[in-house]
Amino acid sequence: MNTSNITLAVKALKAGEVIAYPTEAVYGLGCDPFNQQALEKLFHVKQRPIEKGVILVAASVEQILPYVELTGTEWEDTVLQTWPGPVTWVLPLKQALPDWITGGRNTVAIRVSDHPIVQAMCNEFGSPIVSSSANLTGQPPAKSCTEINQSLGNQLLCVQGALGHLDKPTQIRDAVSGEVLR
Image 1 (cartoon, rainbow, N blue to C red):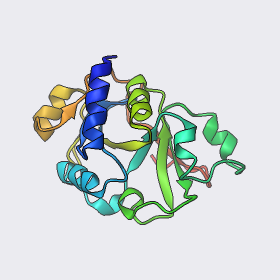
Image 2: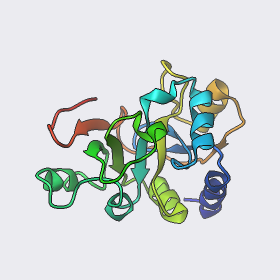
Image 3: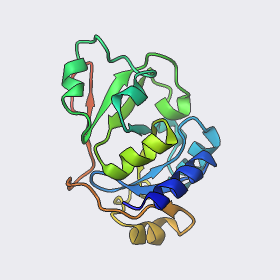
Image 4: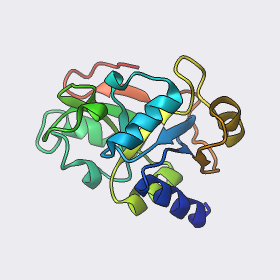
C-alpha cells in the first residue's frame, strides 16, 4: 500500500473533493460525509438523486459509535460478529445526521471495513467517509482506475489498489429486523 497515495486522498477529502478507491468488491467513490458541497459533487458525478442517502465506511467501531445505536442493543453481537468485514448494516441513529447522508431517514447505512486502503484512509481522515459505488447510476460499478477514468472522466483522484475478495458489492442488512436488503 502506497502511503503517499493515502495522504493525497485524505488531503483531497479534507479539501471537499470526491475520490475513488478500492473496496471489498468494486471501486468506491468517497468524500467527507459532513461536507454538503462534497456530497453534492459526488451525486453530480454519479448522476444520482441526493434523496437516496449514502453508505458510510469506517476503520473501526469506535469511529461510528457517536452516530448509531449499537452498544447494549439486541443486535450488537450480530453486527460486531461481521465487523470489520464486508457487511453494511442499517442502524438507528443515536444523534441526527444531515439528510444528505441519511436520505431523511432516522437510520444510516454503515460498514466497518477490513480493506487495508479503506482502513488507512479512514484512520488518517479521522472519521468515516462516504462509500458509493464508482459508476454512473444504473451502470456497472468500476473495478479499476482505468474503468473510472473511462466512465466518469479523469477529474477524480483515484487511489490504486487491489480489490477485496468479494465478487459483488457488500451485503446490506437491517440491524433491527435482520432483513437482508441487498
